[in-house]
Length: 256
Ligand code: ZN
Image: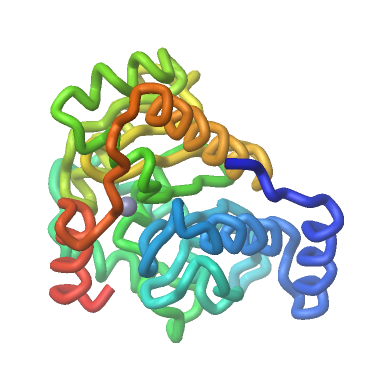
């Protein structure tokens, strides 16, 4: 799998969105979200999401930290700024000190911190994006990764392929508990460039849109090479896998 990043096209996104008064961070976030979303080996049926942290002005012209996360019902391959709802970051980070947060309270928290009340619900994985201290965070349910992450010895395989480059997170249904677990794993070794979530998918992060996107592409390529060398059967991501089922249940229950 090759990086499709192109400086010229990236610049076109920036100038096109500037006309709509949309800042560079979000324009580049939309660009690499499209790159990921258009690759069916990475993203199928609305799975996967992405985010960018930025700064905006509140009603009193004071700077506030924001996070833009993919919204429910939007497709990564063709979303625009309306599909990347913005939220105030600080109240989301305050939840780190909680031990529990149920789905209803989480949805209320997310909705009440939207900067535009008409925005769609942000992804069920919003807190996870918020907690990771990087400007850009990318997440896919890559087929190749799932082939490894669904193996009984997935942990050992990830370690073998990536060494210390990826943190390994046990399976937890998306939501607050998964976000907390991911933060805990990240804090154990802050040098990791991504997180492999057992039975679920992969997160990468970086300081720039290009860095986070290319880490995703490189890690997926490493897994693809390992699979072809070791003749592991590629597991196609279907509704039978744990993650799509849990996403599905949540989507029905919470209209995410
Ligand atoms: Zn996911």
